Image: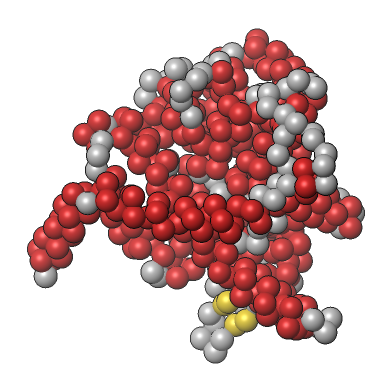
Length: 404
């Protein structure tokens, strides 16, 4: 049976590889009209330009909404992003764990599961894209967005636990689909809540398919093919193998995912940040100039594309892609945490944007600027970050292949 399965897999891989060009064209032909005609005009609608103002850059409504929400929650929750930090660390350490609490995974496992979706290409490719477009100043706004995003993450994950459903087998279902439906019903807006819940579920599937899977797989393949030329032209085969490996993890459900992520994520993050810190230490004399470039670039009227507004938008866009604060997806993972106190899981969740954006994204940005690769033309995404690290440690690109 195993031989037959391997033979079938090999045949499918060969067929898909042979059809690579046609397959790509078919997929692109199907999705491009949907994105161009329906999604882009709504999600990236520019209200400032609509009302006749020109600030020198596009200001998508989705970015405005994320900024507004993050600022509002930070003020409304009395700067929980700062006040709750120490308690969050204590919760993750397990100081308040109760084995009798309902749920499927520990606080730490819920954190690493959510981080597994954000610590990765958002920090590696996303930061490189932000700096190549917005200049070093985009780093400053990424950090600001990360700090504000901690409050948004706290709110959405608290709601995820508060409105979760636990069946007779102890399996948990939660996330925006549930707190939109049930939460708004308490305010006599049940109809609106159901519509928004269904809309979120559809858009979450679409976002996972595109940004969560296709972008990740494409960047992973680009890095692999860049280091191993034999992989060139074998993208579909790589995708098939990747799908099988991912399936082996996720088919077991949230417990299976958590068992994998609690081991991989801390190791991957420590390895990446540790290498970045060594590069920074080797160039410690330059660090002062780097921070000057970041600060001046963040507020310079002629900075990059669109001046200050353009740099700010790039920083916030990439931070949102990196840490997903305000997007709602993380609350699906956090809803499975073993706790009877929804706020406690919200406190744990606020660590995500800090780890993901304030720490890891900043490390990536500092390495890119120190090595001068933020100004390199013709290279972008994960490849830019790979070459920046590789200019100091020649072996790092191979390590990055494993991390990605």
